[in-house]
Amino acid sequence: MTTSQRLKELGIELPAPPKPVGSYVAGLRTGNLVFVSGQIPIENGVIKLAGKVGKDVTLEDAQAAARRCALAGLSIAADVAGGVDKIKRVVRLAVFVNSAPGFTDQPKVANGASDAMVEIFGEAGRHVRAAVGANELPLNAAVEVEMIVEV
Image 1 (cartoon, rainbow, N blue to C red):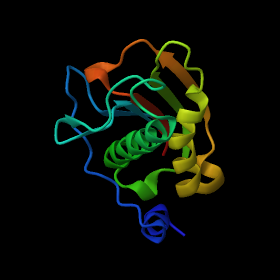
Image 2: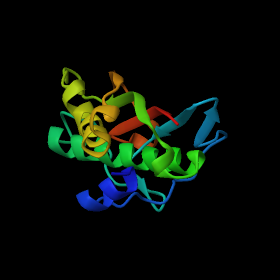
Image 3: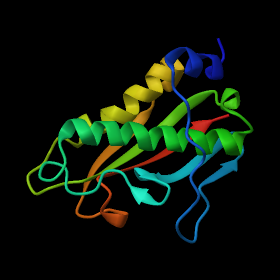
Image 4: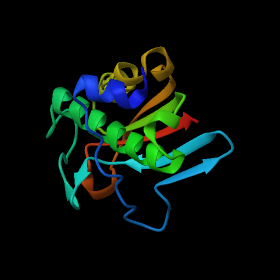
């Protein structure tokens, strides 16, 4: 089964690849790797989940936002690669969590992104990962996810 068939089977529609909001590119291919810049939960220029996780934002909402960010990143990776079916595996995710003081469940937030990649790619979706608490994120986003995929 191709990745596009798997997405259809799961009822997942990738968003349009988000455009950068600064002086950088959204995705870049070098050799057989595609690097995707950090994605925040934004839609039509509006942040969909802002605030500190553990204070303003629940763990469950942050997990959903991490999933949204990962799907946006996958959309960019697919655009750079020439289609989602060109992606062989997910190599790495970095998940940054706008954390309230004392919040230490960044790995649980990151699971929202990681679980989506395994759901879509199976074993090829298993990846190395960093889950990092951040004092602030761009536009007060609750979560940011960057990724590296192999094509």
